[in-house]
Image (cartoon, rainbow, N blue to C red; front, top):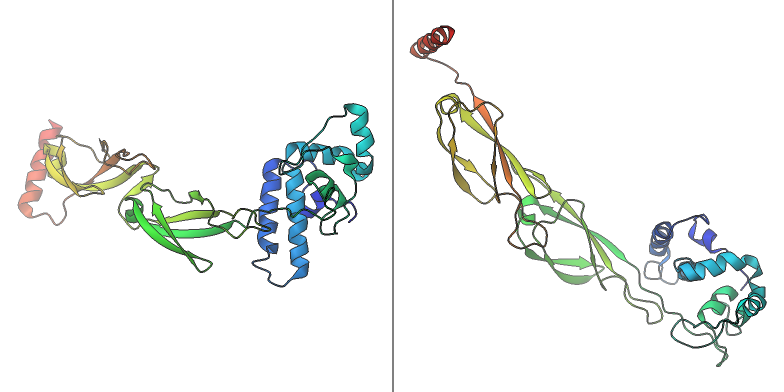
Amino acid sequence: MAFIDYYKILGVDKTATEADIKKAYRKLARKYHPDLNPNDKEAEQKFKELNEANEVLSNPENRKKYDQYGENWEHGEEYEKARSQQQYQYTGGQQGGFGGFSGFSGGGDYSDFFESMFGGGTHSGSRRNVRFKGQDFNAELHLDLKEAYTTHKRTLTINGKNIRLTIPAGVENGQVIKINGQGGEGVNGGPKGDLYLTFTIENNTNFKRDKDNLYTTVDLDLYTAVLGGEITANTFEGKVKLTVKPGTQNGAKVKLRGKGFPVYKKEGEFGDLYISYHVVLPTNLSNREKELFEELAKLREK
């Protein structure tokens, strides 16, 4: 096979970063993976080209050689000999030099450049099977905030396969975790892909979550706000008694240490709970109550 442009195959520029290359490869590999395109020879060939391009461009040393030789890779042998006569190793531990990036004699599934870099049938006359990692899977798991509060087990069905997982307490909305080896099957005996699980957490409670801290509002009657007293307030785990100081203002906040949300993968550690007081004014006052408030108002004027 003639020289191919790996950057073009992945749809990236020559200035692309390693992250750009990884992102482009994953996107296209999912599209053309054989598992999603059964009996599609064109998709299969495209998938091989993508893997070939990724094998070269994702490796800084190999990418440097590819960028250096380009279309003139046939002259790599002379360049290498003239520079240092240094020997390289094939992928898989086979010893030997690059051999001038010599053409491969055992088939046309991969480009000459790739065969020369990763080894060919230099001894057996047949192409060595190149192993590729399986497709990475992506899934989304919906939890409510109460479920995210405790560590629990879940069974997911991915491509017809049941996967038993332990979900740690404290996962956040939008958080992505990687589960090794739970993706697609590898090609030519390569390793399985991975599963990337994204959490979507719905909050149907009266608490607002900000990372490990929780926030809520508690109504406080005017008399308790003025005179002080004791009230009962809700936390995420249950009710607690709070002592209200005399003269508490509307919007005043108190912090309950350790009553917030669990810290992810730190058992026994919790954030804090912040309670804001909302002073509620009395309504439908009786005539006597109005008189008393008028008397209080006159006292305050003196």
